[in-house]
Image 1 (tube, rainbow, N blue to C red):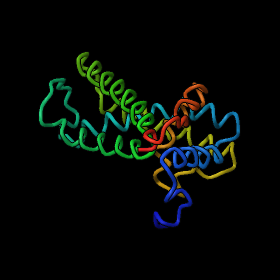
Image 2: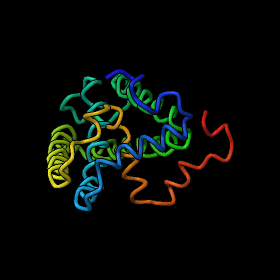
Image 3: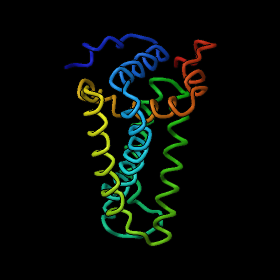
Length: 181
């Protein structure tokens, strides 16, 4: 399915964000599925970010905490993801930048403690996906990302607006047209 076949193409940024959240929400109505997502999506997002930084940077199983060129691939992919959020709204990109920085701080803390970061993140990633599958079995609906892979990046925003309803209002506020940039 091409990008032009999605109804949110051509919409303003705030409208795209609102429609993306609505699309994601449509597959997540069962209370137990939502609860599982509130746990599993943050774990998946954080584990994925950390694994991208460690594995694409060639660090593999190393517990080396220092900065270096190994950070470049993960940094570039993080910037690309933040670019996706920026296309939705500057507010969404700001929120996800904060989440990304917290995740990376956790990675450096684990590395500083010499924890086995990669095996730990792989285990968390896999267990959290099992939770997601269970949630969608309870829901009786397929995951939203099967229709549109970009929904994988909407999941973290969905979790945040479920946990913090005022954040939804702030994310979707459009007092000026510059918010849609």
